[in-house]
Every structure is written in C-alpha cells, then in structure tokens.
Length: 73
Image 1 (spheres, helix red, strand yellow):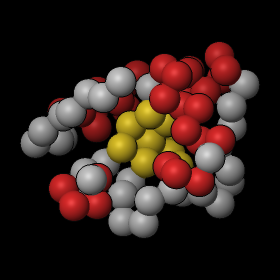
Image 2: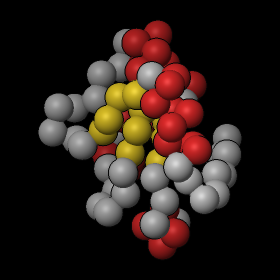
Image 3: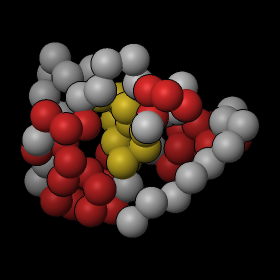
C-alpha cells in the first residue's frame, strides 16, 4: 500500500518490532523508526536496511511535510 501511495512509513511504539522481520523493507518506500521506541525495546535497525532513526523533532518534520497521514494499529 505504501508503494502505491508513494508514502513514507514511520514506525512508532510497538511498531518498531517490524524491524525484526523483512516485511518493513519495502522497495521504494522511505522507512523511519522512532529512536526512543527502538532503544526502550532493545531493537537496532540493520545497518544496511535503509531505516532512518528519528527523534521527536524529526518526527514532527516528517509529519508536517506529508500531504496525508494515516495512523494504523
């Protein structure tokens, strides 16, 4: 769905657990993970995975630069 919409993916809270599988590595989609949530859960993105860790200020920038935001549980 993210590829079809040209969307970025931001992993928050327990969503960072998706970093443990290959499902989050989607060709053509920029994927961000909230750094604090990763640290709290002891999860580190693979160095070659193309995942950008972001802090709160960067999260706000990503959300503000988007035309649409969809929250999913």
